[in-house]
Length: 449
Image 1 (cartoon, rainbow, N blue to C red):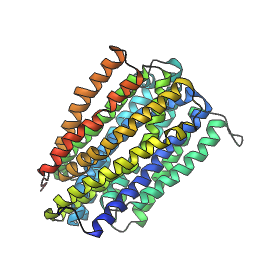
Image 2 (cartoon, rainbow, N blue to C red):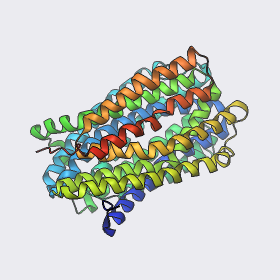
Image 3 (cartoon, one colour):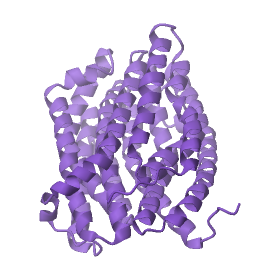
Image 4 (cartoon, one colour):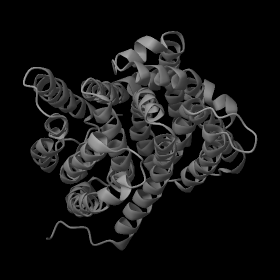
């Protein structure tokens, strides 16, 4: 095809960014996977409680990432223009916005943990374990927020290795402390789910310390100082709201929707809760390259627009779409092939085991759709500047179609958990039709200033 990119540097940069971010995300997800596996081998109630509390963590993640992705779109443009002072001002706005949303969630789970976890399940044992877990793990939220804002800012200037190093420190710390605190080794008390939560708090603190040392003492691109995070620009704030607020709303809406999905499955029994937790965590590990490709695409497209090289946008977008299809097929096949192997690491039996395998089978099919539409929309279209379209598209699919249908299937039509799960994930395929039309019209490139 004549519109395909033939520059070797494009492919090297795309895969360098993609696999660096993917490896970083594998390590981040590995922390959750370690919690799941160790708690699953400790007690089924502990696994269920932590799984419910981790849905709140997922909501926090989506809120912080939503703030951060707005930062990424603007900072990558400024990086293309080599405008370092504006990148610093954008980072200041991003950190303050992320701190505000983190404080709200921290307040909710600290003072009303029973109500928050009670929204996700009516199982009393799972609820009790979830409350015990979240009371402790909530203290990791501020560390998580700071680390991710800084890593996203560094990613916008194509510094990606530090993210891998930071998360590797966290993984080693978390796994080691999990073993000691969950099971009570080396004379430490046996804390179960509370031990996993404490291990998470400590590992998040280690993450934050490492990334801040790098940013303030080792990074040479930005020259950031601590006070730079407290110097927001009012004019830039208006632009950030215009560009970034739809991104935040999209991520926040998605996070709330995932919590609704967990609540729907959570009211279908403990087996469905545990199966969803296992399948979801494994899916996160397998799909890291897919999600990383969206982040890499966003940086490349936004930087190219910032450089003023608009003639490269069309071949870049066409080539990336073909790369997404290849990554989707490979990731879906990998998930399908390893699903039985992965379930062997868990001690769950009966319905939970069979449901987990069925859920992973569904995900192995929908992952191909995710691999195409998600980087097209949240990677290319969003970084091109059309952030509102992505928000409206997600809003309609999730809240007008998927959630209502799944609710009816679960509580009116009495469908099986597998059928409900398939409905909850069907938009990952159907949104492909929207993505292919939107992206190939090439009307999503917007100038900010």
